[in-house]
Image (cartoon, rainbow, N blue to C red; front, side):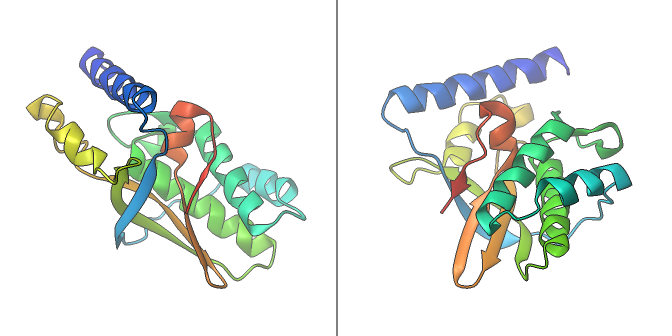
Length: 176
């Protein structure tokens, strides 16, 4: 990863830690649009891992499993290079959607999984993507302008998962 990108990521992490300390403890995700599906083919070995790893799980447990698996497979990068397991939030959402789709399919669950774009909020519904745009160098403003994540819909339930968040925090949380 480039030195400048590492500095920007460090600033972002410090800001999020600062928000947490200042009482902005709960991050949220707001969907603005569904992103056209991108092609990502799961290898046979990943399919086998998913098939055996998700047997008997609930819809929510499968979602958490898929987020954690995505985070294990990918390393964060400024640019997407999925052939070399490098990704930003767009790549994380692309891979996570593919993993979720396959996991629900092999478990015979009729669940809709969407790659979506929106933004991250805090306890006070402040759009943190816009806030970051005002802080980061001009070169990175486009990089932080929005955020891609995954929407999961089953029965009358809708929730979001974010494999990028898991990559940085180690937590595969569900955003309601």
